[in-house]
Length: 386
Image (cartoon, rainbow, N blue to C red):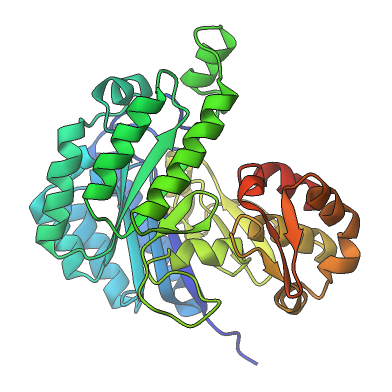
């Protein structure tokens, strides 16, 4: 019996103009145009390899900065995807930096069927943008937003960060006020995480600033309240979407379907340097090295560094952890259908502990984190891993 083609596709573009102070993703400034040419050739080869097993309903192109690719590079990739039957996804997102976008590039993306843009804003305070190592200004955010609307994009996500060193509550409130005035369809907002091997982590370790946990909690509460007042529905720890009327139990209509597939443990192909994929129980990871990635594809093979198949219980625990990031949590029947395991028996102790601490609640049909508990979703997730 032939397997049903995978319906979700992630593509990683490893290039950026400047490495941000907080970024732990695999990315780097390109060493020259030839490196970008080689990447595009390799990506097209990888697309050709997975095309027979992929009929994408969602595509997400992340980075790095995908919009750093030139229009010629984009046209080569998109033409190849069209030839391979990989276009036409219901939701097709491309991440962008406000400083790397122009009208011609935006129109080219829209022409090939890309219908959702996720723009890395992070802050609307110029001093904080400089603090984070961002290459754009606040004015570029507004210009790029207008440009995207002019190009025909009706689904725009804006990415923000809170708990940035030096970000006062007043600055955060001002940013939120201006963002909601733009009337975007989706809002993502993440607390600064201090990852090893990043300049921001080194500065923290050196005592150049201290983390104010109380302020971070207050800023998260301000985010939730301000988003709700502006008409956004929170559907995940850090994600908020506008919505049209819909059947009960369904996510907001402007929710990111691609990310929902991640949190619900669905299959997806991952292409590009450092990309991970999960297909029919096997998780794989490509080499986090653009040169090596290109060399492997030039030899006619996938650039996979590692792959593993998790035992059923371990996979179920991982899925429980991911799914609890969603405000809806896990329905008893849904979780058992997806994993073959029952949350009520396999994780009874962990659920009881979270309920006792006021971080979760047990309902007749499901288990979910409380509003307060969502702030500590990572802590809850660790408890469910096996």
